[in-house]
Length: 483
Image (cartoon, rainbow, N blue to C red):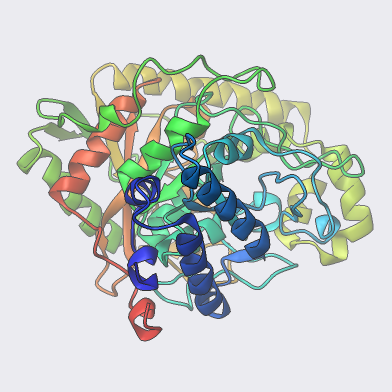
């Protein structure tokens, strides 16, 4: 199998071909590493490639297959791991000078499970500093670029994961999402991203170092999950990484459904709400147009009853950042600023040094409860909620976000208005490619389900993918490079 087809083959197909010995794990790994070598000077998706480890893992898979031994469901499939997710023996820098030499002594739970399933880790993917941003630049590594337009961001904080998968350097990658960071790069990079229900995928340990104890997962907000080119690939990864673990006290029991089987059956007859702007948000006209056309597919082609409706909560933006602060060890982070502040991202330093109060935190908790209550009451009327994933198309690198949306001056993080409310509520939320702007940039559609109703979200995403396929849409950069 030639390198170009391997780079454009989905994970479900690659896993099947490797198990059937139609292609070896070594061939797949070498093809993807060659692709990485050619693309990295342009997209900077991988801050720490691990080609030697990948080759050794692929060789182990091929040896086991040659002996007729059982292999895991991801045996031989290449995967990138976000650089906020711990990898034993492989540095986890988290985009910070303070962690430039940090090598974890244990794997994250999801990395353990991916290895057990036979996935071949090809490297760590780039992030903004400690993930406190929705873009892909940091003080340590080259800025990650969007394969659809190299002048633009692929979104973050799972920036490298999005850029890698969008350009075919592995069919899927691990991302994490404390306020949208699975869904943001998926939307900006023309991909599928799934934030499963809170607790489906266990969290442990998060980036940590005893010298700087403040850096860790945002326990009540954070999710880990896939970015992929197809809905089935995301479901396949979730089938491997989900399930309870004693190290995460919030992890859920094993799902009472099969992640792959729930993709079947369609969504005819479902009641679907569409909120184009929450009733208060500023949204780019191109996003409104593209997402609005995508929503029509649910009624016209998929047989749903769709109506425009808003949950009715007030803008919870300030509460989100207060909860992030409450789940950050500010003392530890302030020690870090004292030592490294001159080399840290300015908005992160400002966030850490802000004089947060107990009232800030308690007000934020009350706001989160109000949002959750509004949402469950709203979702009692609907099976699904559709929104834009992001308020804007991809924008230039080296900013935190546009300061003007649809002619209105806004805070530079306001383009994330649709993602973080579902980190408050823990509801399952996926993004799928809705279409493209007139400039040829990807725009995402967010599909949200009721509490713990991951199956309906995945089935809806799969139904939309079948009705409006995106499998053959690839960034023009790849043709220019012969990929």
